[in-house]
Image (tube, rainbow, N blue to C red; front, side):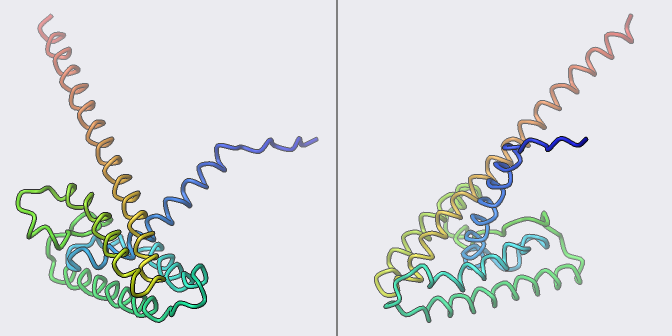
Length: 195
């Protein structure tokens, strides 16, 4: 006789967090294509989140007052689609020429880096959400649907950037631990060989 399995709450929580991260990444990608050089994106970065971002942009006016004109948001959607097409074309061209390939999930090099001097890429990417939020606040005065979308996208960009920074830090810590473990093992091995 089969007993019903108890609900696994950790799986449900993991799925909810995964969905939240995907939504944040979709909001982030909607502005990253404008903030980063099109020729520098990784080949696999534009994935499912592009479709999700398009759906978010398209349906965003449903969350706004019916008195506001959604047309600027649809122009933004068209520009977003064009930028995604340009990035795909740049990736295909880079692959055809046999040029250097960045990490396939690389989010691109920020355009403003040429003006930031010695500031690291990670630092610039941490400032971008503030830039997008302020731009959204200004745009909100003229077209609230687009301005509100940009402000929420800034939040998604912030979460996405911080997740990436945290992930890279954990990987660096793991590599450091592995290097120390290897050094200790080599030292023990050399000591054994002397015995």
